[in-house]
Length: 231
Ligand code: HEM
Ligand code: HEM
Picture (cartoon, rainbow, N blue to C red):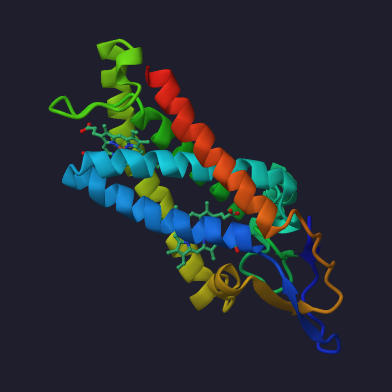
């Protein structure tokens, strides 16, 4: 955990790297892709939808790997906390002396895991879904029609669940900005946060070139793997 105490006036503030480039790119590409998936899914533009969905599956696979080798804040070990830490965080949420975190706080960490899990379920169920008109997911023929019908229902319900958690995500960003006067959004853009100089320095992870290679491999595995399984 990279928690840091509230800044006493005497301690100078420094800018430290928090979100590495691959994590930031992952986030903003995911945002654009998920918006496009909602649009193409609801408009019935399913050929493009299915390609984008598989792309997101590759993106998620990359993030799962990056959660072990990215910089400190990107790692699951940094933000998967026990319930006690989450309760302590919630207790201190409205005061000024509660624990502060460089990366995701313990409650935000649960929200991130939930979003990633829902996205994974959404992308996986899509592979077996069908609109019962003209378009079937690439692995539709690999399951019975009753199982495909259930997975299609799950794909439609998953959309609602995702929408709810994304709205909560946006509301909590607005809460930090407007109520707690803490801008979480700009570090997700620039990568850096201004914190007291006493804050534990971040741990470097694998670099952007390694990230690009791993990302490319993830996409190849997903697209080639699904094509192979669909045969
Ligand atoms: C489709 C919409 C969105 C999805 C699915 C989404 C998903 C996520 C995920 C998975 C993370 C964790 C990042 C990681 O550790 O890899 C995250 C973090 C974050 N997102 Fe989003 N996001 C969405 C939209 C937005 C928007 C529009 C904003 C800004 C207005 C935003 C601001 C942030 C911030 C600031 C964090 C870091 C929070 C922290 O400091 O703990 N997100 N988001
Ligand atoms: C995170 C990724 C995904 C999101 C957010 C998403 C979202 C959606 C949405 C919003 C719909 C419209 C549901 C409705 O009409 O109520 C839809 C339908 C559909 N999606 Fe996805 N999808 C994703 C991934 C995929 C993937 C990977 C595939 C297949 C390769 C896929 C295949 C389909 C199909 C076949 C339909 C039509 C199902 C029906 O009409 O019931 N989706 N998706």
